[in-house]
Image (tube, rainbow, N blue to C red; front, side):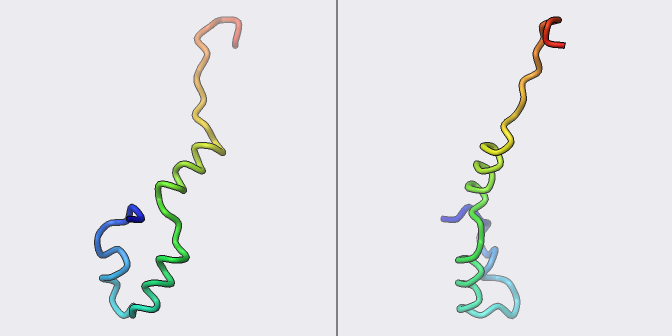
Amino acid sequence: MQGLEDGWVTTTPGLGRPAQLTALGNGVVPQQAARAIGILDPPTVACRHRSCG
């Protein structure tokens, strides 16, 4: 549901259930991070006109 691969947290050796829940609770959902970056630094479009130069 958070966009992570299966087992991203649950198959980490030595990480108990409480620590797994903490890691997931403190994590950033990759889709949210990508959207935030897109908003803060939108792609630029190159101007093909001579007057833009």
